[in-house]
Length: 166
Image (tube, rainbow, N blue to C red; front, side, top):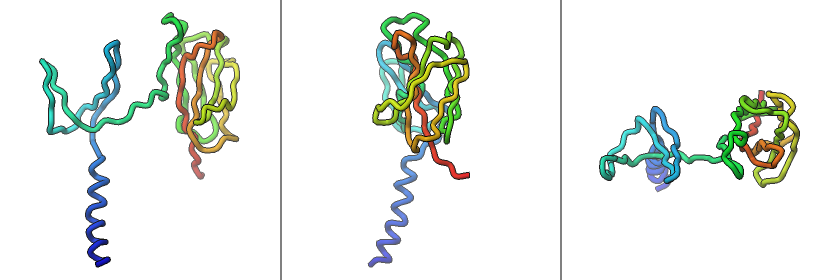
């Protein structure tokens, strides 16, 4: 009896894992005043829904994480409330570099939070390339928040600290 149960589970288990796989060429998220849509290109689908001249195909969608670098607007929509910044390498083991591209970085500061929203560190941004240390922090997910002097949040970036044995 154990032999047959083992054979049955050996056949069934890989099929369950394969059911969550999708091959696609591209995808993304689009948002506007009326809502947002996530899309995948190049995915084979067998069911579609037609509304007016638009055809929607059902398929596998990936979760959209709002902390992956989304700009959060402040009280007004002026151009000083948006910045172009890059955080790399991400995932990281010890340090990340915060690069500010299109803003006067002298008045900005960053705050680093852990996953329980506890403030870990905060510093002024002195140069266009600022190194943020994660050396003494445990493996996990952190949020790097960039703020202006009026305490408007300009950007939140999710940082993943991994332990990679070398």
